[in-house]
Image (cartoon, rainbow, N blue to C red; front, side, top):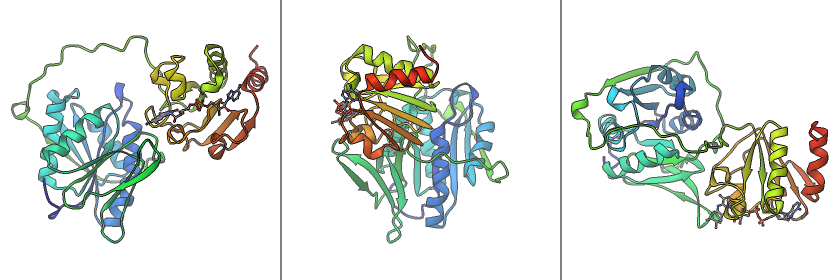
Length: 335
Ligand SMILES: Cc1cc2nc3c(=O)[nH]c(=O)nc-3n(C[C@H](O)[C@H](O)[C@H](O)COP(=O)(O)OP(=O)(O)OC[C@H]3O[C@@H](n4cnc5c(N)ncnc54)[C@H](O)[C@@H]3O)c2cc1C
């Protein structure tokens, strides 16, 4: 879309969760933030939905903070397709000219939004951890970790619109919906004739062995390299099970081959925000901390009283995890 011109409004590209479970949590998180950015610019918020059936999610978008929902509906858009979805989103942006376009750094968001940024000749900051409006310039301040997480870089897109950013799930607070909120839903019926069709959907093949869903977990017990090997991982797993939670891992544990990548928390893993996060033998390197420091309650077990993890912990247990965890398990009724 090129230069700043008369662009206005803050848009959020929203995604539906699988199996009719409403909006993806990160879409809700972004809709919770959008009204604050819009208020700072004196503009409105809008959500964009693409798919075959979008009515239910459109109502949810309004409840979470959208003033307008642009819903592009067509059977040919039922499943994510790089070319089709980017054509639809880029067209909507050209037509309505938002000044800001945000999306979750999900598998779809990471594929779709950079493609749309290129189509519109604008910039995109990936994996932001913080977004705000510069009161002097009115520009979107897009903050993200850089140089291996050692610094936080704040990036602006001064001359091109929309200013685009993706934000990782669970970095922003989880907002509460307001079912009484009112908004406008603009349904755009997309004709299949106008859609590129270079690919064809053949079938869905579920990932072998399933996966672990850390992002939705309310309790996470993470095994750090201090667990020492598979026996220590099993101890952390037993604690996770006893607390009704799931097992996380630091990168050192994944690199050692003790747990698969799907368990990794941190900058190059997933960002989590559970009610309870128990770090067992985790040093608390910045690349790990950025992925879990927004958890509601953090308990750290580490035998080094100087470990960095204690800086982000609410409860610090200084001790050997092989001595600390077994009595905890017994207290929880586990043998
Ligand atoms: C670009 C980049 C991206 C990265 N991304 C990630 C990421 O996404 N996630 C991530 O986790 N890391 C990431 N890292 C790696 C990160 O810098 C650390 O190396 C890693 O987090 C360390 O893992 P750890 O804390 O488990 O291991 P260590 O640093 O080895 O710490 C082990 C801890 O266990 C304690 N300990 C040892 N034995 C016991 C015991 N018996 N009882 C109690 N405590 C004990 C020790 O005191 C120590 O504090 C990244 C690094 C880079 C450069």
